[in-house]
Amino acid sequence: MRLLQIVSESAATTVPAEQSISLLELVSRGGWVMFPIGFLALVSVYLIVERFITINRAGKVDTGFMTNIKTMLLDGKIDAALSMCRSSNTPIARLLEKGIKRLGKPVKEIESAVENTGKLEIYKLEKNLSYLGIIAGIAPMLGFIGTISGVINIFYKISISADFGIQQISDGLYEKMVTSAAGLMVGIIAHIGFHLLNTMIDRVTFQLESTTVEFIDLIQEPGK
Image 1 (tube, helix red, strand yellow):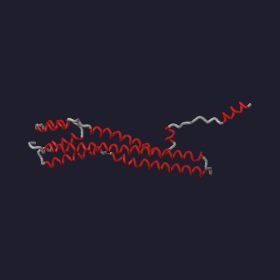
Image 2: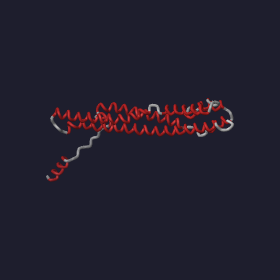
Image 3: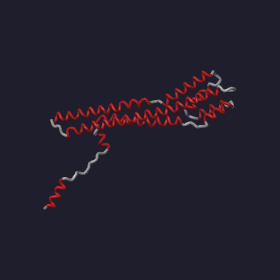
Image 4: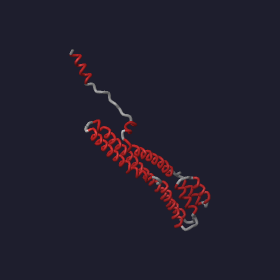
């Protein structure tokens, strides 16, 4: 009898099997706010990947490119230098092409044309980058809206049931926590992507400025 009693008590106190929730189900608990947050997440990933590829490609320049251009210009091979610039689809090549086309004009005019081309190339690299900054600010706000919506849902269920139980507050808590977490995650991703891409653009800007100085020094050399 004693053995049967122990087995019976053990069975009664057995912890129920742990239940898991899928990611899709968890996201669905966030309610309608998850739709705009999900849209912002997709836009952020697209912008980060697209701009990363573009900026990374713009920053890759053959180490011997400027040396070859310099040699051609010193040898008077202007057409060859222009042809080489046109064959290289990079901001530095387009900057040098603009400067070479202006050869023979006053140095100030050449320098101004080259600098304006550099600014235009940087502007192209920064295209749509500001949207990441906007998303970094908006996504957490949408999460906060989801938090408010979840709290409203909790109080509404309590008001119509007159019962302050876990069943009445669980759905609202899900919506509150899921949307807050999702909004913060999207905001953090957009924030990191924005600053990472800006750092990459700064490097390209430095390359363009260095090339501009080197080119202007070259055309001012005696005998050029």
